[in-house]
Length: 126
Image 1 (cartoon, one colour):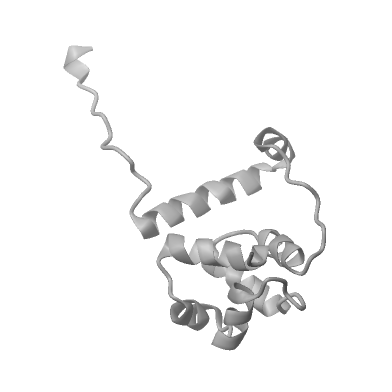
Image 2 (cartoon, one colour; image 1 turned 45 degrees about the vertical axis):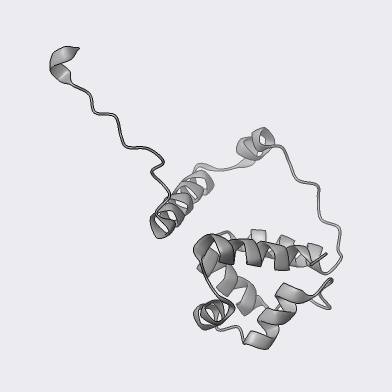
């Protein structure tokens, strides 16, 4: 089983259609370090701060998400995930709007944010 940061990075790469070479170019992380993150069962140490920030920026996720995945990947126990309802209760409006913007941007990149055509309202028939 690959470490949780490696699984997360691979999932995001698959979602965005990125190869290792492209991710390396966009983040500035050398391919050797990227291979270590993606292929290690347990990370020997957390990636450096610049690498964590670069991954968060390319994937449009909060830095905290990458930090927690890196901590888990190193074998550290992080707090158990909260239910979606608990998460929403603790989230600020800025965090919620940031997540909406992230998902819209991700949808625009992948072309998958509109699942069905928008129904048109015929004003005369109402």
